[in-house]
Each structure stands twice: as C-alpha cells, then as structure tokens.
Image (tube, rainbow, N blue to C red; front, side):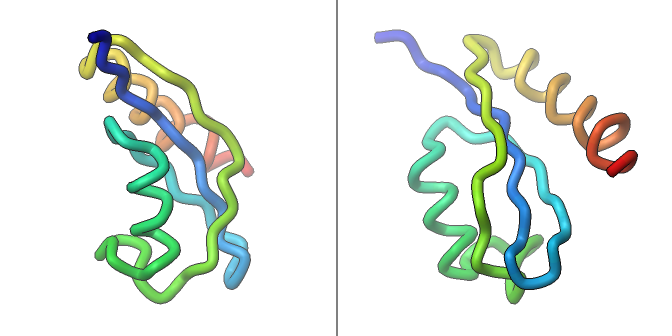
Amino acid sequence: MVLFYYVYLLRSKKDFKWYTGYTQDLQKRFKKHNQNEVKSTRGRSPFELIYYEACRDENDSLAREKYFKSEWVNDT
C-alpha cells in the first residue's frame, strides 16, 4: 500500500486568512480544522479547501509546506 502525504491550503471563511499544513489523512484533518480541534486554527472556522497536492515522501511534503508558508501565502 502506497502512503501519501498531503500538503494543503485552507482559507478561513470567517477572517479570510490562509493556513497551510500537511497530513496523511486529508479528509480527517480538514474535518478537525472545521470542528475547531486544531490549536493553530481554533476559532477561525469554517474553512474552505483551496488547494492540495499529494507527495509520496514526508520530506517532500514538508518542503512544499515550507515553500507555501514562506513564498506563496505571504504574498497574497
């Protein structure tokens, strides 16, 4: 069985701020964000999933997350 790591971008419908992260279970993690169970996004739900991509290697997903946090998201 091939495991994937998902890098994702969310936008809060409440304050329109962006959040990026990575996980192995995108559906479960997205649900947790919307149920205010994630400390870093608590109180900012609901969220919309803007973008995601799958990586086969955890280090690749971490590098992509870092890219989004430092380059892409901060420019919007």
